[in-house]
Length: 417
Image (tube, rainbow, N blue to C red; front, side):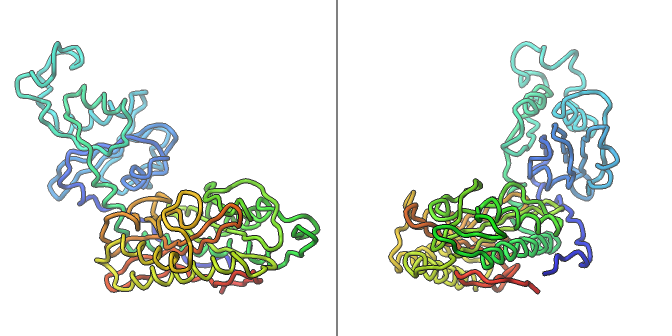
């Protein structure tokens, strides 16, 4: 098994700011956990707030990153925009963003107002010149404190979805980031499948390497390969067995027994922040009952979803979900139930967030560059759970599977090429 260490480094993704052109001036404030801010700045900053500001420029949006002073060098290395502004004082990020706007000539009408704007009696919109008609665009998740500073500076704050919409369409560099981390996820999955293949049934339990095999032991084996491949599990290694395989987000420790489904869902994050998402389901010593019927149904649903994606850009997302759901229903499984059968969408967008638009059960029309999961699954707490998931990029005339992985519910020793 290879881990890809000898492959050439993936170019760092950059950000085109043209989608903000009709939403200027624009401000966002957050920390390194905010994926919109990561997209805008490419800055892997601290766990305290910093700001991004975009204003009209001669050749398009002119952008500034307001970085903490201790991160100045890192910010200048990573930020693809125009300038990095740092401050040694402890001024809040929202206040610093307002100062950048004023320095850029946005909000000049406040310059003749004496004293702090917050001290003016009445609504600031009553000031001569009506400063409140300077419409400032922000993402909906911007912190309230930052909004308060911006409003105090006289801006009318309006939420925009421009950043989220721009993030949906991945560039080839971003897609390559997904491809690399999906490859690493497949290597981790191959390790977990190999451990299952090597496990030995001993009464009502499976034993591997001399001890009972549990979901936590299996998770550690998979995550050791992820680490060697240079990606982070990010707390997203979902492995369940039997009843816990019907729990969509199980990350606990459960003993693995013969004849029960073992669902392995790995979603690591790569160095550039982009996620993978892959799932397979296995059974050691299957009795050929519910698990076999569920596996066949999920394979058929996956093929139906991919057949709908074969037309590429312009396909309605909901029809992909509907085709998969119809196939599962034809195999006798419940649809749109909360606990039994097919209980979730056929897929979702993946990028700097593990779950982002578009949803395959929503009203979106898929576009070239959308990176989505295809993941039909059926669940029954009394029987187990089966899910098959792959990461796909929508192309103009079809789709691309970012990392093939073999199928089959009986685990085998895997050596991925």
